[in-house]
Image 1 (spheres, helix red, strand yellow):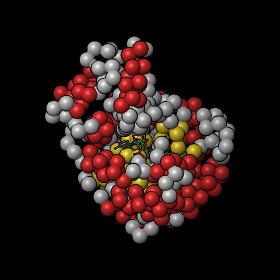
Image 2 (cartoon, protein in one colour):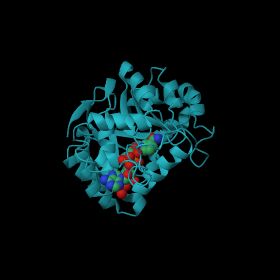
Image 3 (cartoon, helix red, strand yellow):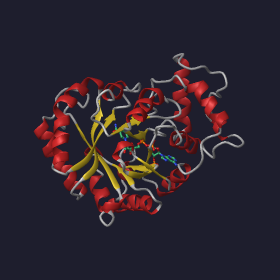
Image 4 (tube, protein in one colour):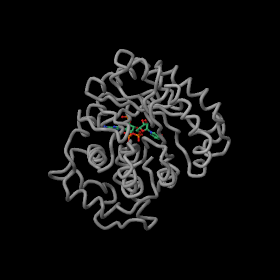
Amino acid sequence: MERTTLGRTGLSVSVAGLGCGGHSRLGQSQGKSVKHSVSVVRAAIDTGVNFFDTAAAYRTEEIVGKAVQNCRDKVVISSKLGVIRPGTDHLGQDFLTADEFVELAEQNLSRLNTDYIDIFHLHGVMPNQYEYCRAELVPALEKLREDGKIRFFGLTERFIHDTAHTMLQRALSDDFWDVVMTGFNMINPSARHRVFSQTRAQGVGTLVMFAVRRALSSPDATAALIGDLIARGEIEQVGLEPDTPLAFLTETGGASSVIEAAYRFCRHEAGADVVLTGTGEPAHLRDNLTALSKPPLAPELLRKLEAHFGQVDSVSGN
Ligand SMILES: NC(=O)c1ccc[n+]([C@@H]2O[C@H](COP(=O)([O-])OP(=O)(O)OC[C@H]3O[C@@H](n4cnc5c(N)ncnc54)[C@H](OP(=O)(O)O)[C@@H]3O)[C@@H](O)[C@H]2O)c1
C-alpha cells in the first residue's frame, strides 16, 4: 500500500484509510459481532493500511482501540466529536461549551484505550455553526493539544447538507486546521476547486469521504441520482444511458466496476491525500484496497466524467 505525507502534519499515511463510520460502521450497522469488526480492522492493517477514521458518534472507537492495541505507535488514529450537545438537533445551535467538549474528548481517549489521538476533528460542522466553533472550541482543541491528548486539529464538513463546501471554504481562510475531511466523488467533484485548491496552497492534509457511498455502490441508486439531476436540468441526458448511466466507465479498457472507478477517481485527484473506504465486508475491503492501488482512470474517461458532472455541486450521493 502506497504512503503519502498528510499535509503539514508530516504524518506518513497509507493513501487508503479505513472509514469506521458511514452506513456500515465496520459491519456494526448490519448486526455483525465486535469480533468480526475487529477482524476487518486487522485485515486492513495486514494489507498496509495505517489510517483509521472513527468518531464518538460511530460507536466504533472501542473496536478500533482493540484492533490496534499491539501496534498503536504504527497507526494513525483520526477521531471526532460533535459540537452540539448530545441528544439535541445536530443542525442546531445548542453547542457544547469548551469545558464540556474537553470532558467529552477524554471519553474518546478512554474508548480508544489510548493516551493520544493523532487527529481530532470537530465533527460535521454546518456553515452556521462555524463561527461558534472557531471562537469557543478551537481553544478547547488547544487545551487538549497542550495536555498531549491530541496531536493535530481536524475539521469535517456535513456533506449531506453542505454539498457545495460552504463551511470548509470559510474555515480555510483561518489557519487553525491541520487536516480537513471533505466529500468528493465522480458525481460531485466540486471540492476540486473549492477545497483542494486551498488545502494544497496551505499544506492542509485532506481526507476524502463519500467516494462511493450509496449512490455509487448500487446501480439502481446511481441511475436514480443521475435521473434526478437530469430531471432538475442540472446535467444533460445526452450520452448517458437511463438505466446504466455510468456503463461507459467499465467498457473496454476501463475499470472492472463502477465502484473500482469511483475509488480510483478519488485516489488520483491532486490534493486528495487519504481516500476513506467504509465497509464491514472483508471481500469489499480487499476489492477496494486493490482499486485504491490501481493507476488513474484513462484520460478519456476523466474527460467524459468532467463533461457530464464537472459542474455538479448539489448532491452528496448519500
Ligand atoms: N462528516 C463526517 O465526518 C463524515 C461523514 C460520513 C463519513 N465519514 C467518514 O468517511 C468514511 C467513509 O464513508 P463513506 O460512507 O463515504 O464510504 P464509502 O467507501 O464511500 O461507501 C461505503 C458504502 O459503500 C458500500 N461498499 C463499499 N465497498 C463496496 C463494494 N466493493 N461493493 C459493494 N458495496 C460497497 C459499503 O457497504 P458494505 O459494508 O456492504 O461494503 C458502504 O455502505 C466513513 O466510514 C467515516 O469514517 C465522515
